[in-house]
Amino acid sequence: MLSRHSKAMAILMLSIAVAAGGLVLTRHVIAVAGEADAERLNRSILDYIAQKNPQAPIRAFQRFPEALVAEAQKSNLDHCLVLAQAEVESEFHQDAVGAAGEIGLFQILPSTAAIMEPVVGPFKRPVGVKAVRDAKSDAKSDAKSARDLGDLADPVVSTKFAMAYLRDIMTRRSSVRDALTEYNGGPAGRHPYYYRMVMGTYVEILERSELRCRFRETPKPSPVLTTLLTRA
Image (cartoon, rainbow, N blue to C red; front, side, top):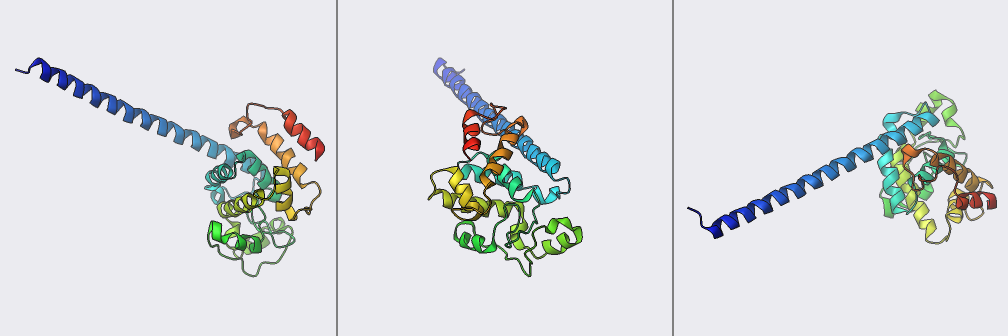
C-alpha cells in the first residue's frame, strides 16, 4: 500500500506530465495556426498577382510570397511596399527584359546581381538575351527569351538579389525615397516619378486588408504617406 508521501509524489509527477503535455499541445496548436495564417497570406499575394497580371504563370510564383515576406523583414520594410515595387518594375512579368538589359520581376541588371553574389550566392547568367523593352508583348518571343534569361527570371531569385541590393543602398541612404531612387538608376534616378509611382501603388495595396500590410489598420493613405507623395 502506498504511503502518503508516495501518493503525493505520484500526484506531483502526474501533474507535471499533464502540464508538460499541455504545453507541447499548446505550442503545436500555435505552430499550426501560424502556418495556416502564413498560407492564407501566401494565397492572397498570389491572388493579387493574378489580378494584376492574368497571364502570370502562377506556378512560377509559388515560392514568391514566402521570399517576399522574408526578404522584406530582413530589409525592415513592409512586404506590401516591396510588392508595390515589383508591380511598378515589371507588372508581375517575371521574364520581362528592360531596355538596358534588366531582367525579371525586379528588373535587375546581371552586372548588378553579380556584385551581390558574395551576399546572395551564385546565379545562372542569361545567355544571348537582347535588350528588348517589352518582350512580354509577344508570347512566342517571351517563351524564347525566358529560356535564355537564367536565374533572374525566377521571382524568388529576383527578389533575393533585389532586396540584397536595396539593403546595400540603405546603408548609405537615410531615407526609403533616396534608396528607391538609387535602386532605379543611380542617385539621380532614371525615371523622375519612380518613387511617386511606387508609393502610389503602395497606397493602393494598403487598401487590401487580406494582404496584411504593416499599416493595414489604416485603410486610407496616412498623413505621413500623403505628405511623402505631395513632396515627391
